[in-house]
Image 1: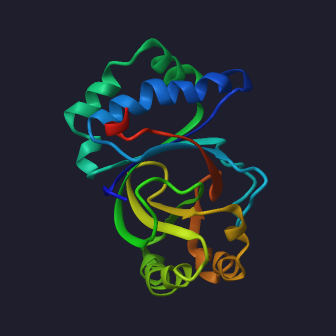
Image 2: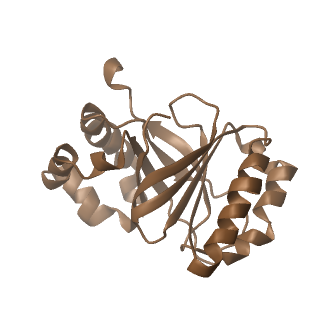
Image 3: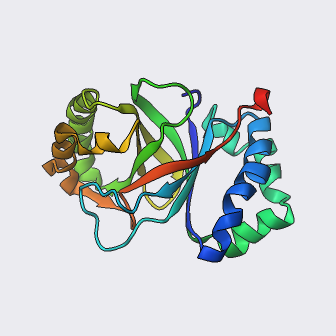
Length: 225
């Protein structure tokens, strides 16, 4: 996937606003951002029938997340994108200010590409972890993650991409994004054991994390618009 910058916006929506949500993204949000160099970009709905460990409490994940990859972290702070944020169309402003509830916005930079085995577009299914780790425990967690978790995930069928991010904005410092070819891959025994590993015990998960999401809309490449 080209780019090391990431913007992820989680939210809930009232049922009466769902029908217009995806057209708004496809018509007003994706095209201008793709035009200034963002991409890929896609929106995902919470897969309420799919759950994954480790458990993180009683708070349900937000029901929608829209994700943009950018060439660099700087693109999310540079003038072209900040102009888009400063001048919004009426429908755009209405969604951001009134309709998107329980928002959680993350700006992050990729620390490594643990697994990269698919094309540039997002895979159909995402598993997202958002968490913090205490400073006196982070080194041990990093050793386990980099030497055990990533290599074991590489053997999980259908796990097309695993990326680890550190957040510049957001309620949690660590952001993991797993991309799967299909729902059946979540049931892999090896992956299930990884998700129950004791090493996760040092992580303080954000409310609503982890969450599994299905892709429902994606931005068209700029050269095909």
